[in-house]
Length: 151
Image (cartoon, rainbow, N blue to C red; front, side, top):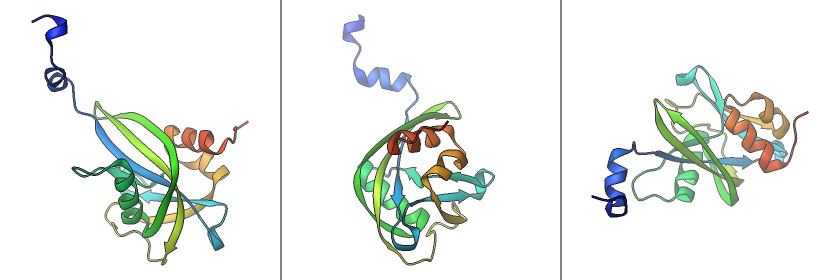
């Protein structure tokens, strides 16, 4: 079989499937105005990250982001715009996470729905997020999204 005859499906079976996830940068309002929501994950050594999670079958990136934000924060949020994506490997498998800037619509203060995955939700300033998020990819996304160059 020549190179031109190789079907895309046969190439895909030779490469590891990518993990696809989505999440949100939730902008606060009222007493959280000027802040973004971050989650603490005990499973990963109290990792501090943006709310995100894997997409379900048939779910769009936007649908998955809204669902994951709710499950991990207890907040209802509306997508304002696409923010960007991060890429990294999980045990050798490529992972891509699509992020959306979201406006907080409702926070009843009950915290995460998925209490096994998330132990707490914190509201921190954008500047604080740039320096305290656990993963460099998320810190870079916050910087790029809000045009705050760290000096």
